[in-house]
Length: 122
Image (cartoon, helix red, strand yellow):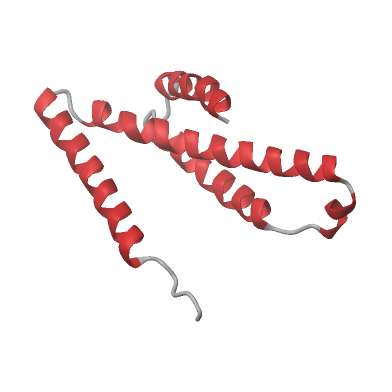
């Protein structure tokens, strides 16, 4: 999947940079990512009994769903990280925005990691 990301990230960045809309360059991609991620994340975790008899079809189904979830995440994350360049032209503002974004990401990850676990039975 790293190869998929290695190919899709630059393509997504280029498309995001070249997008011209009344909503800006980044927002249309971030909004398009939402239904893609939601729909295919649901399908990724849905069990289809018809796929139980054909391992090749099951593999293809889950591979396609996973690739489309990954594509949706790429469509969101690449424009999202490029927003700091769009928001401000000053280097110090970009550093502050990136630091705040990264700090909140770390804080959220640590909070979920320490407090988001479900209790285990005896």
